[in-house]
Length: 117
Image: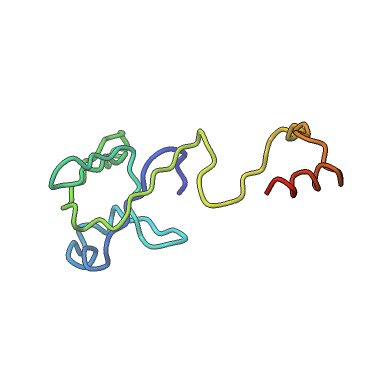
């Protein structure tokens, strides 16, 4: 996704087929399947309401509302720029603090512990 904040809405293949040419202007290709990028989403109801940022033929910004039945949506992914998003290992930005040793571990401690089992 090119936008820092928003939602990617993925549809079932049968839904894309049923919506046909009407959905094509709103679909974006990505590393996965075609999806709709939107700024806001409302899933409380029989229809999922997606708010998209668009432009009129004159170039003026306009908010578009795209609504589809909830059964057509396969998955919604939320992406925000305030945190790392995805399934990658997280790398600490500061060195980890060394933890203090709780108990000294030597042969006498180990033998005392085994005797109490």
